[in-house]
Image (cartoon, rainbow, N blue to C red):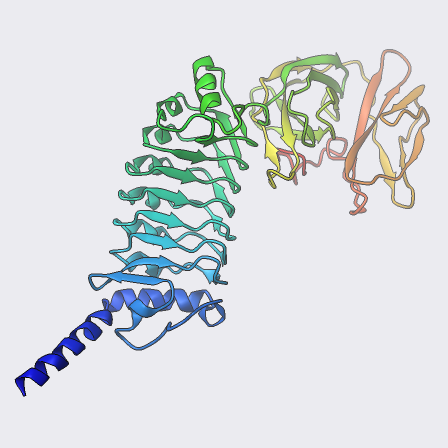
Length: 443
């Protein structure tokens, strides 16, 4: 009898151990993930929602010591939001949910996972900002957040991740500058390319000596710059392909006032060297010292080097600045704007000249005309008549320079969007409220 009982015990013990029950809070966290990501339609949901004690047999779940240790459900048709309850998996070492259809924000509660080594949320549709609470993941070695729709700044708190070896944030919509705190990390991979990052690169990044030469870093397709020769050389040595500068959308140099009228100021600048992807320049003005920038339009090519700021007040001092922009393209799906160029100041004339207004008549073709009597007309399209017909293929600015008796030479401008038949002359009407502080191509 004793022998048979012993044999039965030997059989029962392994089975009982294999189905050890995890804490209820961890089971609830797994169920919350299933419910919030349409678990019924996952590619593989084997054993999920089985009875208590079966959690460690659920597909993608690995346990150790009676706790969930790994949760990997990559390429598994998860659709929905990441539940905050995952922050209750206190013994989790690996969380991987890449290549799914996750939406919404990253829960800040994930910052509670103090034992986490790896966090992979890449190739989803996550939006919102990166929670600064992720900087509390002291054991984290790899952070994969790339190929989402994350926006906002890179949290300085990520510089607290003392165990981090790889930080991959590329192909998002992150903006602002690179936090100098990233220079505190011990990294082997830093990918920040294809975002909307701008500003001067902090010198602290030169501390990242553990990045492998030639492929440890990728900063391409942003709006970053540096005038630190030592830092530039260091970053080039680590950069994938060896050249991080040639794809940066930087502000144009040598902004100059070429001509002044009562209502018009013509600006010129040097074209930027990065011209391989489409884009142009947006021009801005502000009453001197106000700091309130008003968009005055944009060019359609990076080769353009002149533009008239129109509709200004006579005998008034203005500051002017120009921003470069790069259109979305194969390697970066974002519209990228540079920093503002160094400002120039000018005071408009006071000769009593009239302010020209361009009127638009919608039709096929669209008719633009300058009412009033002037001695001469010169349109951007080359015509020298008071009225022209256009068939625009995309939205763009048109302007006409007119002369009249005496020294009066002024320019009027109009924005034409062939898909939206609405007249918007902005500066000429003085109604800039809808887009007065917009930076970039789109008003």
